[in-house]
Image 1 (cartoon, one colour):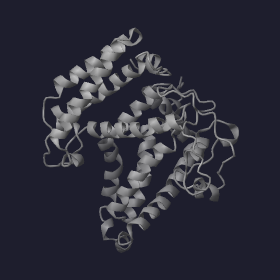
Image 2 (cartoon, one colour):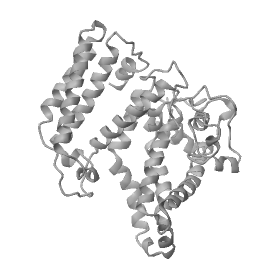
Image 3 (cartoon, rainbow, N blue to C red):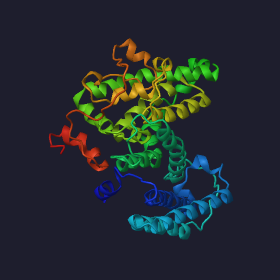
Length: 377
């Protein structure tokens, strides 16, 4: 099934007037409407506990109805274009299914973070917001003008995006909870009170400094230790940079990065508001530095990582390999002599010699096959 999706929907030109754009919009909105309908049907299972108290059921119902109508309308228009008939029909069917399923009500039950849930709402909200921000941005200021919205590899990357958002409880179980258990007496440390009493803006920058120092060395280890490179090579396997490429991360790398980030935050005892500000920033920043945009930021690029800086890290050009490890602060690359910032922009991406599968399952198994001496082909 995944191979069929990649063959049919990747590297597909959305030519105006042929119904392809309408068909793509119909299918995309139809799928999101269907997910939203499941949130109405089983809110305890498919919505994020921390969000439930903020939801207005009637507003969400109207929003769902509008999205269903829009998806159906795009599908109907695509149906009238012979080249996109079957895709338009698919979008219409998805919209109809969403209308049939979405007949329940989103309640705001007492939040119980211990219950099992799949955050479909979190996935929908973040995907819609990021798509509305970055797709127009990349079309208006593209670094690679000929790169398509539905470029090669996007099907795989959207699956990574979905996993990282739907599996947030599972990821937390393997990162935050072990740290909390291990440091269950950490709240008694006096220096944590001093740190938490600092201005929020100062704590925010301290988190950047501390966390990026740790992640710099983890990132560098993943490049320079062959066994770890097999994990990180999955992230570098993308040959096209855009906002969605940031999601391509092996689950072991996600766990390592989250653990390395959360550990100093819990040990030092930063205030929750500073941590939330950091998490919002880092989430947006990680997507932005992968985006297909041509911004150079002449001065800022030496202070904080920019798309230009990080694109060189992904470059497969010889001089750029194993450079620019820092996630936020190029200072660490400058200190440890791993900076590479020529006057031109990076133009070639991907790994040099690694034969990494295209699909998410093959990429998940890739490190294990190498570790146990099996072929990764």
